[in-house]
Image (cartoon, rainbow, N blue to C red):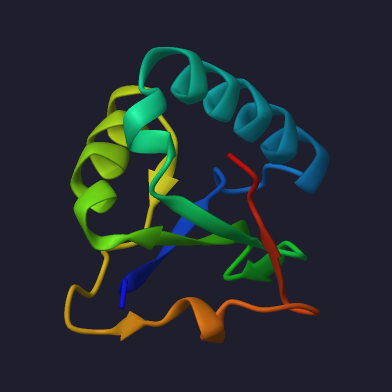
Length: 105
Protein backbone atom coordinates (compact mmCIF):
# COMPACT_ATOMS: atom_id res chain seq x y z
CA UNK A 1 0.00 0.00 0.00
CA UNK A 2 1.23 3.49 -0.80
CA UNK A 3 1.83 5.95 2.01
CA UNK A 4 1.21 9.65 1.69
CA UNK A 5 2.39 12.66 3.67
CA UNK A 6 0.30 15.76 4.16
CA UNK A 7 2.12 18.76 2.67
CA UNK A 8 0.76 22.16 3.68
CA UNK A 9 1.55 25.07 1.37
CA UNK A 10 1.37 28.53 2.90
CA UNK A 11 0.71 31.95 1.49
CA UNK A 12 2.54 35.10 2.40
CA UNK A 13 1.40 37.09 5.43
CA UNK A 14 -1.51 39.30 4.35
CA UNK A 15 -1.83 37.56 0.96
CA UNK A 16 -5.46 37.02 -0.08
CA UNK A 17 -6.83 33.62 -1.02
CA UNK A 18 -7.19 34.80 -4.65
CA UNK A 19 -3.55 35.94 -4.79
CA UNK A 20 -2.33 32.70 -3.24
CA UNK A 21 -4.51 30.66 -5.59
CA UNK A 22 -2.95 32.48 -8.55
CA UNK A 23 0.57 31.68 -7.33
CA UNK A 24 -0.41 28.03 -6.82
CA UNK A 25 -1.78 27.77 -10.36
CA UNK A 26 1.49 29.17 -11.70
CA UNK A 27 3.54 26.84 -9.49
CA UNK A 28 1.61 23.67 -10.37
CA UNK A 29 1.66 24.52 -14.08
CA UNK A 30 5.44 24.91 -13.91
CA UNK A 31 5.86 21.73 -11.83
CA UNK A 32 3.72 19.65 -14.16
CA UNK A 33 5.70 20.82 -17.22
CA UNK A 34 9.18 20.54 -15.70
CA UNK A 35 8.83 17.59 -13.29
CA UNK A 36 6.04 15.35 -14.60
CA UNK A 37 7.40 12.22 -12.89
CA UNK A 38 7.47 13.95 -9.49
CA UNK A 39 4.04 15.45 -10.13
CA UNK A 40 2.68 11.90 -10.42
CA UNK A 41 3.29 11.58 -6.67
CA UNK A 42 0.81 14.34 -5.83
CA UNK A 43 -2.28 12.31 -5.06
CA UNK A 44 -4.91 14.71 -3.68
CA UNK A 45 -5.65 18.35 -2.91
CA UNK A 46 -7.80 19.61 -0.03
CA UNK A 47 -11.13 20.90 -1.29
CA UNK A 48 -10.84 24.16 0.63
CA UNK A 49 -8.25 26.71 1.59
CA UNK A 50 -7.70 27.30 5.29
CA UNK A 51 -6.47 30.33 7.17
CA UNK A 52 -4.32 30.25 10.29
CA UNK A 53 -2.32 33.06 11.87
CA UNK A 54 -3.19 35.47 9.05
CA UNK A 55 -1.84 33.10 6.39
CA UNK A 56 -3.82 31.21 3.74
CA UNK A 57 -2.99 27.49 3.49
CA UNK A 58 -3.74 24.57 1.17
CA UNK A 59 -3.00 20.92 1.89
CA UNK A 60 -1.90 18.15 -0.48
CA UNK A 61 -1.45 14.42 -0.02
CA UNK A 62 1.87 13.48 -1.60
CA UNK A 63 3.54 10.10 -2.00
CA UNK A 64 6.51 9.71 0.32
CA UNK A 65 9.04 9.50 -2.54
CA UNK A 66 7.70 12.70 -4.09
CA UNK A 67 7.85 14.87 -0.95
CA UNK A 68 11.54 15.88 -1.05
CA UNK A 69 11.56 17.00 -4.72
CA UNK A 70 8.31 18.90 -4.20
CA UNK A 71 9.52 20.70 -1.08
CA UNK A 72 12.78 21.64 -2.84
CA UNK A 73 10.91 23.06 -5.83
CA UNK A 74 8.48 24.95 -3.58
CA UNK A 75 11.44 26.62 -1.84
CA UNK A 76 13.13 27.40 -5.16
CA UNK A 77 9.93 29.01 -6.50
CA UNK A 78 9.18 31.01 -3.33
CA UNK A 79 6.11 29.08 -2.19
CA UNK A 80 5.93 28.55 1.57
CA UNK A 81 5.57 25.08 3.01
CA UNK A 82 5.19 23.88 6.59
CA UNK A 83 7.70 21.25 7.74
CA UNK A 84 6.54 17.79 6.66
CA UNK A 85 6.31 15.14 9.38
CA UNK A 86 7.69 12.01 7.68
CA UNK A 87 6.35 9.85 10.51
CA UNK A 88 2.76 11.09 10.07
CA UNK A 89 1.63 9.07 7.04
CA UNK A 90 -1.77 8.37 5.50
CA UNK A 91 -3.27 5.84 3.13
CA UNK A 92 -5.09 6.86 -0.05
CA UNK A 93 -8.32 5.91 1.69
CA UNK A 94 -7.85 8.79 4.13
CA UNK A 95 -7.72 11.32 1.29
CA UNK A 96 -11.32 11.01 0.15
CA UNK A 97 -14.16 13.38 -0.63
CA UNK A 98 -15.75 15.53 0.55
CA UNK A 99 -12.50 16.87 2.04
CA UNK A 100 -10.10 15.97 -0.80
CA UNK A 101 -10.01 16.04 -4.60
CA UNK A 102 -8.04 13.20 -6.16
CA UNK A 103 -5.72 14.60 -8.82
CA UNK A 104 -6.01 12.90 -12.18
CA UNK A 105 -2.74 12.11 -13.92
